[in-house]
Image (cartoon, rainbow, N blue to C red; front, side, top):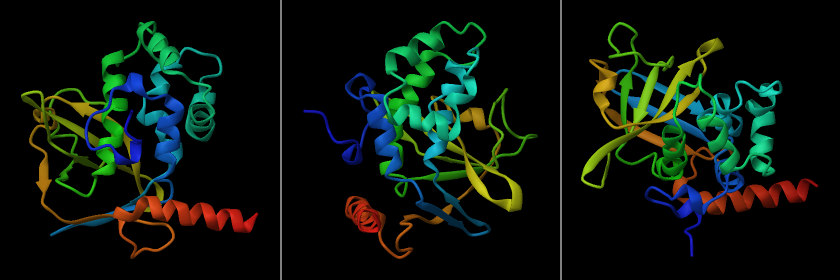
Length: 227
C-alpha cells in the first residue's frame, strides 16, 4: 500500500503516484505562509498552488506546443488536478524536446522529492542569499534566496531546494524547485543561519503546521458551510 503523500518523509517512486495526486497534495498547502527569520533578515512567502506547473517543469515539456500557455499558472494547475497531464505524456515531451535545457531525470527527481521537502520544510532547512556575482557556474535561478535541505540517501547527499524571488512591492514568491547533487553550484553565496522557520495556516496564524490534516478538514468544512 502506498503512503499518503501528506505522510511521506522520504523520496517517493513517481511511478506510484499520478500527477493528479501530486496536484491534490500540493493544493493542501495553498494559502499557507512560510515565515523565515535569521539574525539579519526576515521574510514570508505565501504558497500558491498555481506555481506547481513551473515547479514540475511543465514549461519545458510544452514549450513547443501552440497552446503552451495552457500549461502554466492557474490553467496548468487545473490540467494537473483534472488529470489532463499524465506522467507518461510529461516524460515523452521532455525526452522529445531537443531544445530543452532539462532532462527527464531532473523533472523526475523534482516529483520524487517534492512531498518530502514540503512535509518537512520546518526541519533541518538552510538558507543562502543568491547573488549573481557569487553564484558558481551557469544557473537558471533568478531568485533572491535559496532554501534547501541536505538529504542523506544511498551513500550520498542531495539537496532539494526552492528558489524564492522578489516581485513587485518586495513580495517574495516561489520561483522554482530543483534537486542538486552538489551544493557547490551555489558557489560562495552567503549563508544565513535560520533562527525560526514556520509554515502557518491561512485560517489561524498561530496554529501549528503539524496539524495540517486537521486544518484542511476545517477549511473544507468551512467552505461546505458557505455553499
